[in-house]
Image: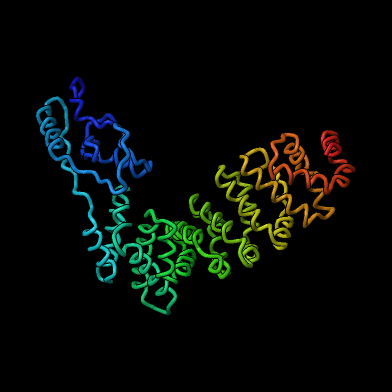
Length: 416
């Protein structure tokens, strides 16, 4: 193809490459389907890239068959120059096709095959995922498959083949449901219509299949983020055990962050902090911090840990871990502003409610006091600086007399 000049109107305005599946926006501009769908769906844009005109919310792309045939004819004409003919694209998936697969997904003989086809369709493009999500009853069918599969696993059935088939169907449904873009209101309605969904997702977290556990955790995080305080207060101990298990087992980076955010969101309600501590959340999160996670995971870990430390049991468990104070202090002024704020909040909880002589000595020895002074000296105001000052004022006498505190810190304390 070297040396062959491609007509400019065959090129996509976004990718500047020859279009394989040209489609036209309501503005009259033609793009390659993959490029424009990436612009509209992946990048969440609502304008035409060329004209910058705002597009209607229900704007659809129209296949430009005439231009596609011209491109194919041109490719055939220049085949001797090494130009390969573009294939005729597959027809876009429609709601009728999705609805037929959903009907099959509710029939045991055709269920697994239908779910696999839905998974394949959803994996192809964001447009297909939007089509599946907008098909009436789609999310409810997927939720029912998950619920029924989890229920059948709890019954005393000796037919291994049936259990394996149910688990596989559940795995496929989890992948499809997790891939869909579902709003908070839609999740609320889904849980209202399928009350056993949270319990079923918890049951999936007990399995050994990491992909299923990861998908279940991501869905569970989304469900809990929109749940009412009453529902959050009623969460069972088993759920916290399994969520902490996701962190401990390093199921996947995405699942770990989802588990941490689920803990941070659920802990303020009822006795959920105590449940999280009983599940081993404090130890699991401290161990995660010791592994030097990337920034967002570190921030999520410190946020969840700060929430758990809102109860006496959480603070006692944190102090009991020999590396906890050191690793939390280490994150101050090192990872991000948010991480520093959460780490100082954790130390503030300990200094106010768990300040034994041993803890104060440890804070001096591991550099926590030095970090607090650095926060004060950096200024900037805000709650982080106020908390750092309050900690230093509360325990200035203990740290002023400590041989572990440098002269710099002693001078800093005296000027507060």
